[in-house]
Image (cartoon, rainbow, N blue to C red):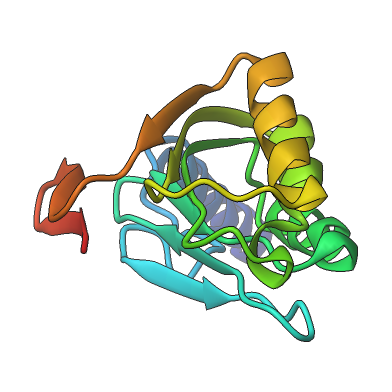
Length: 160
């Protein structure tokens, strides 16, 4: 017969083995409560706009980046989320309070595509953003009416 101490050690060992097998097989809960869900982050950039969307499969989409001061805030926020690359960045229109912070984002993250409305603007902010897109080698796409930029499972992003 097993002594009380041996029996307790056996029980502890059994639960430790079960815990390790569960942890290694991915059975433990994620620390990210939004993993596998669509999440929308409204980033506080003061007087301006910035929105980050993450699809259930992890694809990131950034809409605007606030003004020049807001770009650092957007980049810091995204880094805290663990973002390293942003497949899609959308600039809604060429006003400084929406695109002024794009330089910080475009240079600090791997960005695949940048979507811009089909407008021309002569501001230094707009020209600087275009220069950054070119120097970073990012793909610039002019948005057309009702363009679908993402279809992923149940998620569709259509630009109007």
